[in-house]
Length: 282
Image (cartoon, rainbow, N blue to C red; front, side, top):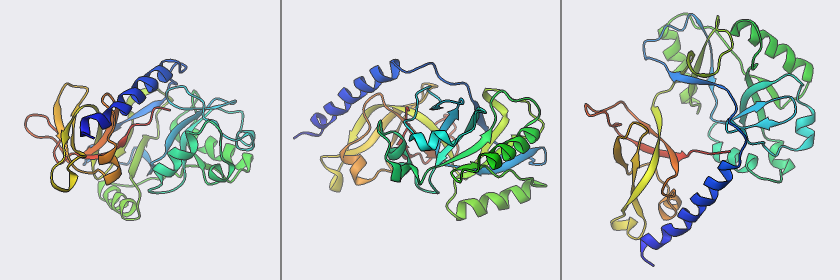
């Protein structure tokens, strides 16, 4: 079978996914992080580990994704959550995103899988006060719930940029993804805002798949590289970061992927771009 014919099922899946997404509720408001400068002063911020999980907002009745879709969490999990709205990440552990994603996407939850899931809480939607004050409230709410799978994300202070860099190196060395910096004096806001910054050893961004480059040598008959387009219209190819399974079954045309890179070229293209995963649309 020629490689191009292997791509037809992905186009069909994309159309189905687009239809399903169109039926989803309105996207949920949430605070989104900007990228921190390398020389950022952490003194005004509360700092925490960046968890590579799935964003989840609790409205007092249901766990919803940023897209507004409801996660099919088990009743025993939902029953233990407080009435107070929460914002956080569903998380299993460092380097376990695929396992987590497989568990929380299921329409029928599997208890054994959800018993491994923790809800890592880092914000109180629409709550008054500064973030430092909201963090104290988060800790009280989590303690009162007395539910081991409900966890207040630890927030801590760092005195200067050198301490911040050391902490980042420690987290990454231990398998973590990076750090989050939240202005301690910030009132609650939504949308992409400098009140929240992310700091990682590699930058990451998203792009839409617009085509394929056939593989050569040991990848003959498989995908060799993805042709992608960023939101700013820049087009380029990504040829690394793929498992053999992904090369055999590449992301569909129109799928949005996340990739890592190290800075930009003088033409504004990502340097050393490497595929990370398909962006999940829960």
